[in-house]
Amino acid sequence: MSLSAVPDRVRVRAPGKINLFLDVGSVQDDGYHDVASVYQAVSLSEDLVATPADDFTVSVVDEAGAPVPGVPLDDRNLALRAARMVAREVGYLGGVHLEICKAVPVAGGMGGGSADAAAALVACDALWGAGLTSPALQELAARLGADVPFSLMGGSAVGTGRGDRLSPALGRARFDWVVVIDEAGLSTPEVYAQLDRLRAERRPDIAPRPEPPEVDPVVLQALRSGSPDLLAGALRNDLQDAACALRPDLGELLDRAVEIGALAGLVSGSGPTLAFLAADADAARGIEQNLSAMGHRARHISGPVTGAKVVTR
Image (cartoon, rainbow, N blue to C red; front, side):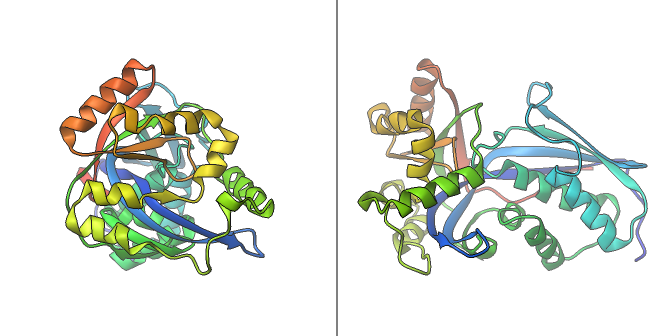
């Protein structure tokens, strides 16, 4: 493949996500679960700068410029794997350095690693002038992980299968959220395993869902209408009880959600980040202040936002 001139650097921004709805099917023979999910890309995002290099390297800092613990800097890093994948795809023989500024919490259930991978796909494609089509990037994203294709797409979408078969959800109305970020992450495989254990105990409050998993149409109606009240009544996450079983303090804060002004609250993905839906931006700012006064790391964010995109070159 003929590649165009290489620019000095490419900056890409990719969004974190909230699972507004997550219906988890029974565990399959390969250990995975089919899901039906509604994703919303939110304004808490990752910034990635790609620059030419002789090898493939990555550095990760937080918004204050400090190193981020718990993020691998070798080939276990999803963004680095994405960069190598693009290089193989287009026959690029050089390397790249990826500098990631993380705002999405590590192991927080908001798809930060997937956002990094999506950003790396877009950045390397632009840096090397590869000209990969959107379907080609989506195919590479699906090979990296179930949440990566949505990080490319952005907006709001329904995900089925492993969560990577996407269809856009109609409706662009703004929804305001407050997220509570927890420094102690939860392992996604551990949360799924806990859900399987709870279901094996045949607890009546955590019964397996009908197969195959499906999305409640009320969620999509709420997105189309732009109604926070309607959406609040339809939020659901099958992983929530499992996450709260591993971290009972999460359930305690969720129970207080309405008391501090939220319409509803839920665990984001596999947790431990909590997302509280607000009636509007003013209400969200009040919730953020209340949670911060309680000693929590709270952020007012909104969605939907666009997927991974070049913001400067």
